[in-house]
Length: 312
Image 1 (cartoon, rainbow, N blue to C red):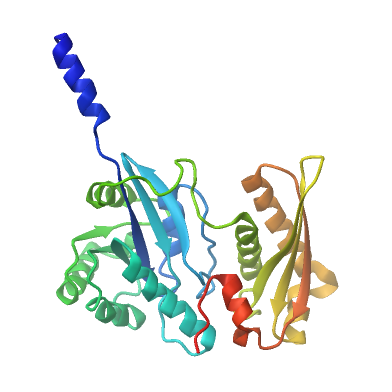
Image 2 (cartoon, rainbow, N blue to C red; image 1 turned 180 degrees about the vertical axis):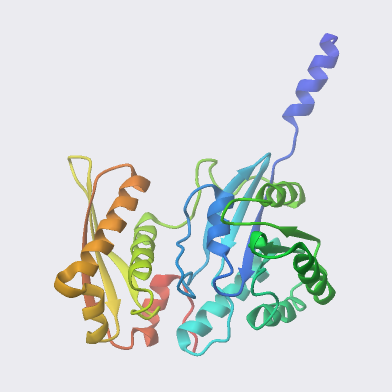
């Protein structure tokens, strides 16, 4: 190769344009959105539990793939709202979709297009951003059923592409990343290369504890329970002291959160402290308190704390 050809090759490599954009991940409750975002980002940025409506506000997970920075917006599950908090979450989900460069609809292949998924497909007809369809849990459904689902969904909404994946084991996820990295608009990256989320650490810590709360007590405790980080103290020995409050709406719920002889709250604290120590890479002293705050679901300040607009 001549010197001139080498120079030209170097210049070509140096001028590969960067791409960036926001991808809103929407779907029905428990479709696997948070699991998929964590998989695509390659780190835990969104909490996961079996409880419906675990994600309340938009959580942004930031991934680098090839020359593209992809900002995934994990939105609350879309369902038929019954309470003020429900309405706020559904409004937030649709608002996130309309602000994104791309919309990714995640469908639970086992559940198909019934109920909330069908409602979401109808709603997407009014959204003009490019959309891709992602069928999740493909290892649980026959190929014929998957093809039927893809065909039915594409007859309702004009999707740019359809992907079949397993968020749990990662099958098919690389294809999604390849497509988005090439399809997003050219432009500078929005965040530093080593940043994986825009969630403040105090809020992430509260989310981790809320996840452990739901994993431990998801059948007994209503999803309206809320966690706030009230104190965060970096100590001279390199550890951090964190004080958090779990808010419930009734005394009966407080008893459930504490458990017999405090067993439940101890287990929740231990699990949360372990994960926070791993994330922060420093020792964590975590102190949890349970308080009753009646009708907090009607308090605008609590909605702001969660990153939600208070619906009137």
